[in-house]
Image 1 (cartoon, one colour):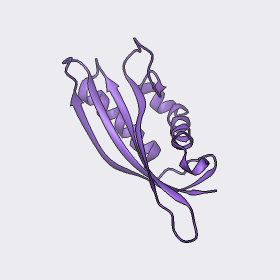
Image 2 (cartoon, one colour):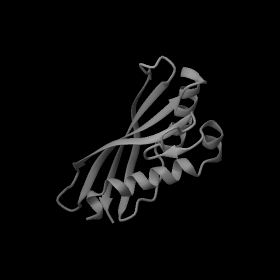
Image 3 (cartoon, rainbow, N blue to C red):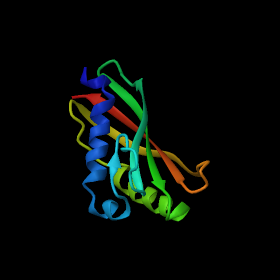
Length: 134
């Protein structure tokens, strides 16, 4: 059932981020799960949650998902700069999602934290997508 797929939206987000040359000047890669020893800075596509968003006439889902920015040498400023570019690429973007129609994609919230190692800044962005069956 394509309408229930976490992967279809994740794939569209990955394509949007990894195809942007400006973002790729800021990060080494965009990952689902980074390989051990990955060079900083990088982005990971993180957690996602699906809820029903159907009406009498359409079948749809609300998907909330996270994008993580990881920075070490560039610190909080580098993480913030990466997050600004991710915002530009995803907020109100018209992504093509296989098997679904993207009705809306909006930024919800963000935060930047220093990890317990004292070196790594971790930015987390949350987005909300509304999708209908194609």
